[in-house]
Amino acid sequence: MKTLIKNGRIVTATDDYFADVLIDGETVNCIGKNLPVQADKVLDAAGKLVIPGAIDPHVHMELPFGGTVSSDDFRSGTLAAAHGGTTTIIDFAIQYKGKTFAQTIDEWDAKSEGKCAIDYSYHLAITEYEPRHQPEFKKIIDAGITTFKLFMAYPGVFMIDDQTMFRVMQSAGEAGGLTLVHAENGDAITQLINNLLAQGKVEPKYHAQSRPPTMQADGVARAVRVAEVAKAPVFIVHVSCEAAMKELQRSRDEGHPAYGETCTQYLFLDETYYDKPNFEGAKYVFTPPLVAKENIEPLWKGLKLGYLQEVSTDHCPFNFKGQKELGRGDFTKIPNGGPGVEDRLSIVYDGAVVKRGFSLNKWVEITSTASAKMFGMFPKKGTIAVGSDADIVIFDPHLERTISAKTHHMNCDYSLFEGWKIKGSPETVLSRGKVIIDNGQYVGRAGDGKFLKRGACAVM
Ligand code: URP
Ligand code: ZN
Ligand code: ZN
Ligand code: ZN
Image (tube, rainbow, N blue to C red; front, top):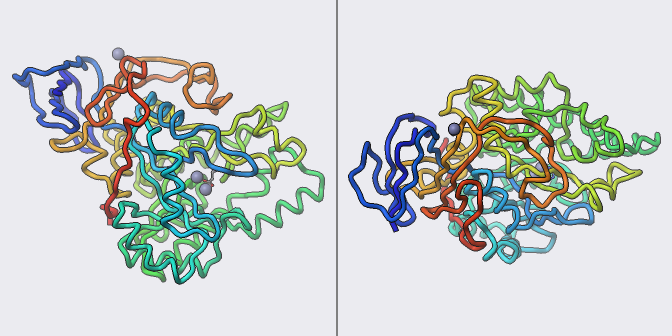
């Protein structure tokens, strides 16, 4: 099957030109002006941007958390992602106590297999590291899972101690892997929570007060310094505030392989959202929490200057009705997480290109290419080039629409950006050569998406 995308403006992280793209089967076969070829299908992209499919490297589908389970499974979550122009996700396979790494991956395979609309992979989140796990690093890396994740938060559930952090970073680094860290001071936060509850402070806004930016900055400082001593690369997930970013920046400036991301919500929303009446602040209870507005422009600047590599969503939705409501009367019982996987590419276009004058190249970089390189998928993913997977979005930069839970495809009864009017939306989405979104309509099949074997980080 040959598909020809004609007359579009091709934008990658480095290039910007008008040409046709010929897809043969699953990959890009040829790029050129007025290609004299016969194709089975012709897509006219005149007036549109032709960009690599977006990559969201931080999502949690069907994640058990706080006595409930995140409301998107791999079927609904990847379908929503596809609608938004995302053609690859990386979820987190979380090791439960007593499980081997291999068993953990099997558990996540059981949730994802045959369900995905787009390609997918996992980071392996390690919560327990015994000597018997050590030989598993190489095996897991050989199986295409090259990134490991540690939580310095959620004590008693996912949190590891600093010795474990050191050992994982060292073992992962020696085996050619990259360690991702959720950086916070989990123990100090426990006491902050206890103090607030003892004072009867139970509303959603106290979630934010229990996790001040300083406690995230402390976690980042510790994680990057441990990585420096372990001589291992490190990647800090969901950096939400300037104080934390500065700790990362310090390590980078000293020449260490310390990288990071922020998420859509931190680039647009601030802590005042917790003041919404009728418990609606609970919709914004995720970790780390939203912070003061003064942090927003520094995060954008961090992306521009390269202290932060990309924008993910940390998509981990819970319905307001029945799930977020579990925390009425006790903010610690509000399941942590929010919906995001669908609208990231468009919202970041609006925020970066339309509102802040970022180049189109930079937009593609922070929503696709940087993740492909960082997490070992480049140039199969993250660019439009001969031989690359034909994961391509035909993006209409003029299309205006209003974001709403009424029209989104995420299995969540609210949107973090309800009623926002944005400019720019995906029109047609191809996953490995096959049209899966045609003029906004899903025309794919669950199971089109395949597990993606990743290689080593290609940034260092
Ligand atoms: O609130 C969040 N972010 N929930 C998902 C788990 C995590 O910490 O990434
Ligand atoms: Zn986290
Ligand atoms: Zn997360
Ligand atoms: Zn248009």
